[in-house]
Length: 269
Image (tube, rainbow, N blue to C red; front, side, top):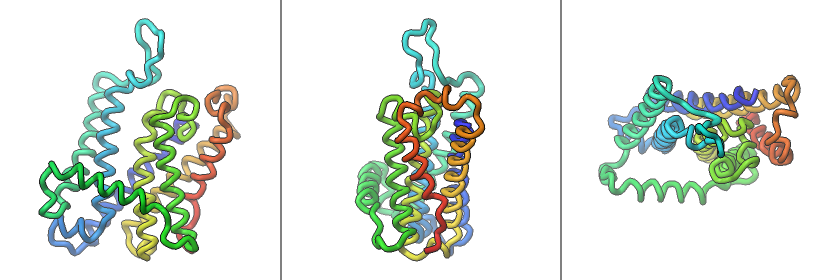
Protein backbone atom coordinates (compact mmCIF):
# COMPACT_ATOMS: atom_id res chain seq x y z
CA UNK A 1 0.00 0.00 0.00
CA UNK A 2 2.90 2.38 0.65
CA UNK A 3 4.09 1.98 -2.94
CA UNK A 4 0.54 2.49 -4.20
CA UNK A 5 0.52 5.75 -2.25
CA UNK A 6 3.73 6.81 -3.99
CA UNK A 7 1.89 6.40 -7.31
CA UNK A 8 -0.24 9.39 -6.30
CA UNK A 9 2.47 11.45 -7.99
CA UNK A 10 1.13 10.26 -11.36
CA UNK A 11 -2.05 12.27 -10.82
CA UNK A 12 -0.04 15.48 -10.41
CA UNK A 13 1.98 14.78 -13.56
CA UNK A 14 -1.09 14.00 -15.66
CA UNK A 15 -2.91 17.07 -14.34
CA UNK A 16 0.04 19.28 -15.22
CA UNK A 17 0.39 18.00 -18.79
CA UNK A 18 -3.38 18.15 -19.34
CA UNK A 19 -3.39 21.74 -18.11
CA UNK A 20 -0.64 22.70 -20.56
CA UNK A 21 -2.48 21.02 -23.44
CA UNK A 22 -5.71 22.82 -22.54
CA UNK A 23 -3.92 26.18 -22.43
CA UNK A 24 -2.47 25.61 -25.91
CA UNK A 25 -5.83 24.54 -27.35
CA UNK A 26 -7.87 27.40 -25.90
CA UNK A 27 -5.42 30.28 -26.28
CA UNK A 28 -5.69 32.82 -29.11
CA UNK A 29 -2.02 33.73 -28.77
CA UNK A 30 -0.09 34.07 -32.02
CA UNK A 31 3.32 33.34 -30.52
CA UNK A 32 4.90 31.41 -27.67
CA UNK A 33 5.70 34.68 -25.92
CA UNK A 34 2.05 35.80 -26.05
CA UNK A 35 1.02 32.39 -24.74
CA UNK A 36 3.36 32.74 -21.76
CA UNK A 37 2.16 36.27 -21.06
CA UNK A 38 -1.51 35.22 -21.21
CA UNK A 39 -1.10 32.44 -18.63
CA UNK A 40 1.50 32.72 -15.84
CA UNK A 41 0.80 29.14 -14.84
CA UNK A 42 1.86 27.96 -18.31
CA UNK A 43 5.44 29.11 -17.80
CA UNK A 44 5.49 27.98 -14.18
CA UNK A 45 4.19 24.48 -14.93
CA UNK A 46 6.68 23.99 -17.75
CA UNK A 47 9.55 25.04 -15.51
CA UNK A 48 8.29 22.76 -12.73
CA UNK A 49 8.06 19.82 -15.14
CA UNK A 50 11.56 20.56 -16.40
CA UNK A 51 12.84 20.48 -12.81
CA UNK A 52 10.89 17.29 -12.08
CA UNK A 53 12.24 15.57 -15.19
CA UNK A 54 15.87 16.43 -14.46
CA UNK A 55 15.55 15.49 -10.79
CA UNK A 56 13.89 12.17 -11.66
CA UNK A 57 16.68 11.34 -14.12
CA UNK A 58 19.28 12.07 -11.46
CA UNK A 59 17.41 9.90 -8.98
CA UNK A 60 17.40 6.95 -11.38
CA UNK A 61 21.11 7.37 -12.05
CA UNK A 62 22.21 7.75 -8.42
CA UNK A 63 19.53 5.83 -6.49
CA UNK A 64 22.05 3.15 -5.56
CA UNK A 65 24.30 5.80 -4.00
CA UNK A 66 21.51 7.66 -2.19
CA UNK A 67 20.03 4.46 -0.72
CA UNK A 68 23.32 2.66 -0.06
CA UNK A 69 23.27 0.34 2.96
CA UNK A 70 26.26 1.22 5.19
CA UNK A 71 28.71 -1.54 6.00
CA UNK A 72 27.71 -3.91 3.19
CA UNK A 73 30.42 -5.66 1.17
CA UNK A 74 29.85 -5.88 -1.71
CA UNK A 75 27.91 -2.62 -1.57
CA UNK A 76 24.12 -3.11 -1.48
CA UNK A 77 21.36 -0.53 -1.85
CA UNK A 78 17.69 -0.33 -0.95
CA UNK A 79 16.86 0.88 -4.48
CA UNK A 80 18.87 0.76 -7.70
CA UNK A 81 18.38 0.76 -11.45
CA UNK A 82 20.72 -0.68 -14.05
CA UNK A 83 21.03 -1.70 -17.67
CA UNK A 84 18.19 -1.13 -20.11
CA UNK A 85 15.72 -0.21 -17.36
CA UNK A 86 17.95 2.61 -16.16
CA UNK A 87 18.50 3.87 -19.71
CA UNK A 88 14.79 3.87 -20.52
CA UNK A 89 13.82 5.66 -17.33
CA UNK A 90 16.50 8.32 -17.75
CA UNK A 91 15.44 8.77 -21.37
CA UNK A 92 11.76 9.13 -20.46
CA UNK A 93 12.29 11.52 -17.56
CA UNK A 94 15.02 13.44 -19.36
CA UNK A 95 12.97 13.96 -22.52
CA UNK A 96 9.99 15.20 -20.50
CA UNK A 97 12.25 17.61 -18.62
CA UNK A 98 13.85 18.81 -21.86
CA UNK A 99 10.45 19.44 -23.43
CA UNK A 100 9.35 21.51 -20.43
CA UNK A 101 12.59 23.49 -20.48
CA UNK A 102 12.37 24.22 -24.22
CA UNK A 103 8.76 25.39 -24.02
CA UNK A 104 9.53 27.55 -20.99
CA UNK A 105 12.46 29.16 -22.82
CA UNK A 106 10.38 29.82 -25.95
CA UNK A 107 7.68 31.54 -23.85
CA UNK A 108 10.05 34.07 -22.31
CA UNK A 109 9.93 37.76 -23.34
CA UNK A 110 12.41 38.75 -26.03
CA UNK A 111 14.67 40.56 -23.54
CA UNK A 112 14.94 37.43 -21.36
CA UNK A 113 16.10 34.94 -23.99
CA UNK A 114 19.74 35.13 -22.89
CA UNK A 115 20.44 31.99 -20.79
CA UNK A 116 22.75 34.01 -18.55
CA UNK A 117 19.71 35.94 -17.29
CA UNK A 118 17.72 32.82 -16.43
CA UNK A 119 19.11 32.17 -12.94
CA UNK A 120 18.19 35.73 -11.91
CA UNK A 121 14.73 35.42 -13.45
CA UNK A 122 14.07 32.08 -11.79
CA UNK A 123 15.39 33.32 -8.44
CA UNK A 124 13.21 36.43 -8.61
CA UNK A 125 10.16 34.36 -9.51
CA UNK A 126 10.70 31.84 -6.72
CA UNK A 127 11.27 34.63 -4.18
CA UNK A 128 8.10 36.41 -5.26
CA UNK A 129 6.09 33.19 -5.04
CA UNK A 130 7.37 32.37 -1.54
CA UNK A 131 6.35 35.75 -0.13
CA UNK A 132 2.98 35.49 -1.94
CA UNK A 133 1.89 32.13 -0.52
CA UNK A 134 -0.47 33.70 2.02
CA UNK A 135 -4.04 34.13 0.68
CA UNK A 136 -5.14 37.62 -0.31
CA UNK A 137 -8.50 37.08 1.36
CA UNK A 138 -8.41 34.95 4.50
CA UNK A 139 -12.21 34.83 4.44
CA UNK A 140 -12.12 32.87 1.19
CA UNK A 141 -11.80 29.19 2.23
CA UNK A 142 -10.58 28.10 -1.21
CA UNK A 143 -7.70 30.58 -1.16
CA UNK A 144 -6.84 29.45 2.35
CA UNK A 145 -7.03 25.80 1.27
CA UNK A 146 -4.54 26.19 -1.55
CA UNK A 147 -2.24 28.39 0.52
CA UNK A 148 -2.09 25.66 3.17
CA UNK A 149 -1.57 22.92 0.57
CA UNK A 150 1.27 24.90 -1.01
CA UNK A 151 2.92 25.35 2.39
CA UNK A 152 2.40 21.69 3.31
CA UNK A 153 3.88 20.44 0.03
CA UNK A 154 6.94 22.65 0.50
CA UNK A 155 7.37 21.35 4.05
CA UNK A 156 7.04 17.77 2.81
CA UNK A 157 9.67 18.48 0.16
CA UNK A 158 12.06 19.87 2.74
CA UNK A 159 11.45 17.02 5.19
CA UNK A 160 12.25 14.36 2.61
CA UNK A 161 15.25 16.19 1.19
CA UNK A 162 17.21 17.30 4.26
CA UNK A 163 15.83 15.46 7.29
CA UNK A 164 17.08 12.11 8.55
CA UNK A 165 15.06 8.97 9.17
CA UNK A 166 12.36 8.56 10.36
CA UNK A 167 11.12 12.11 9.63
CA UNK A 168 12.00 11.89 5.93
CA UNK A 169 9.79 8.80 5.53
CA UNK A 170 6.55 10.40 6.69
CA UNK A 171 5.23 12.00 3.48
CA UNK A 172 5.73 8.84 1.38
CA UNK A 173 5.71 5.92 3.88
CA UNK A 174 8.19 4.16 1.55
CA UNK A 175 11.04 3.78 4.06
CA UNK A 176 14.48 4.08 2.47
CA UNK A 177 13.50 2.87 -1.00
CA UNK A 178 11.70 5.90 -2.41
CA UNK A 179 11.53 8.46 0.39
CA UNK A 180 14.31 10.51 -1.23
CA UNK A 181 12.55 10.45 -4.63
CA UNK A 182 9.07 11.51 -3.48
CA UNK A 183 10.07 15.16 -2.78
CA UNK A 184 10.43 15.61 -6.54
CA UNK A 185 6.68 15.25 -6.81
CA UNK A 186 5.64 17.07 -3.66
CA UNK A 187 7.56 19.99 -5.20
CA UNK A 188 5.38 19.69 -8.32
CA UNK A 189 2.36 19.56 -6.01
CA UNK A 190 3.46 22.80 -4.33
CA UNK A 191 3.75 24.57 -7.69
CA UNK A 192 0.35 23.28 -8.77
CA UNK A 193 -1.31 24.35 -5.52
CA UNK A 194 0.23 27.81 -5.83
CA UNK A 195 -1.12 28.16 -9.37
CA UNK A 196 -4.57 27.22 -8.10
CA UNK A 197 -4.32 29.74 -5.26
CA UNK A 198 -3.56 32.50 -7.77
CA UNK A 199 -6.39 31.29 -10.02
CA UNK A 200 -8.79 31.46 -7.07
CA UNK A 201 -7.66 35.01 -6.25
CA UNK A 202 -8.21 36.02 -9.89
CA UNK A 203 -11.61 34.33 -10.12
CA UNK A 204 -10.46 31.88 -12.84
CA UNK A 205 -10.35 28.56 -11.01
CA UNK A 206 -13.89 27.49 -11.97
CA UNK A 207 -13.76 29.12 -15.41
CA UNK A 208 -10.59 28.05 -17.21
CA UNK A 209 -10.23 24.41 -18.23
CA UNK A 210 -6.49 24.33 -17.51
CA UNK A 211 -7.11 25.08 -13.83
CA UNK A 212 -9.80 22.41 -13.67
CA UNK A 213 -7.18 19.88 -14.80
CA UNK A 214 -4.71 21.12 -12.20
CA UNK A 215 -7.40 20.88 -9.53
CA UNK A 216 -8.27 17.34 -10.61
CA UNK A 217 -4.59 16.42 -10.39
CA UNK A 218 -4.40 17.69 -6.82
CA UNK A 219 -7.61 15.88 -5.84
CA UNK A 220 -6.41 12.67 -7.47
CA UNK A 221 -3.16 12.91 -5.54
CA UNK A 222 -5.04 13.32 -2.26
CA UNK A 223 -7.52 10.52 -2.94
CA UNK A 224 -4.85 7.95 -3.86
CA UNK A 225 -2.51 9.09 -1.07
CA UNK A 226 -5.16 8.80 1.64
CA UNK A 227 -6.67 5.65 0.15
CA UNK A 228 -3.27 3.96 0.33
CA UNK A 229 -2.84 5.03 3.95
CA UNK A 230 -6.29 3.67 4.83
CA UNK A 231 -5.46 0.44 3.04
CA UNK A 232 -2.17 0.05 4.90
CA UNK A 233 -3.80 0.65 8.29
CA UNK A 234 -6.96 -1.41 7.75
CA UNK A 235 -5.97 -4.21 5.38
CA UNK A 236 -2.20 -4.70 5.39
CA UNK A 237 -1.44 -7.66 7.70
CA UNK A 238 2.11 -6.36 8.18
CA UNK A 239 0.87 -3.13 9.79
CA UNK A 240 2.11 -1.87 12.20
CA UNK A 241 5.05 -4.29 12.67
CA UNK A 242 6.66 -3.59 9.29
CA UNK A 243 6.07 0.17 9.42
CA UNK A 244 8.74 0.84 12.01
CA UNK A 245 9.78 4.25 10.69
CA UNK A 246 6.21 5.53 10.66
CA UNK A 247 5.56 4.15 14.15
CA UNK A 248 8.41 6.24 15.53
CA UNK A 249 6.71 9.52 14.62
CA UNK A 250 2.95 8.82 14.57
CA UNK A 251 2.07 12.45 15.26
CA UNK A 252 3.81 13.62 12.08
CA UNK A 253 2.13 10.83 10.11
CA UNK A 254 -1.33 11.93 11.27
CA UNK A 255 -0.53 15.60 10.63
CA UNK A 256 0.60 14.78 7.07
CA UNK A 257 -2.63 12.91 6.36
CA UNK A 258 -4.73 15.76 7.74
CA UNK A 259 -2.96 18.30 5.53
CA UNK A 260 -3.31 16.11 2.44
CA UNK A 261 -6.99 15.76 3.32
CA UNK A 262 -7.42 19.43 2.37
CA UNK A 263 -6.93 18.45 -1.28
CA UNK A 264 -10.33 16.77 -1.28
CA UNK A 265 -12.24 19.93 -0.35
CA UNK A 266 -14.39 21.36 -3.13
CA UNK A 267 -13.28 24.50 -4.98
CA UNK A 268 -16.72 25.97 -4.36
CA UNK A 269 -16.88 28.56 -1.62
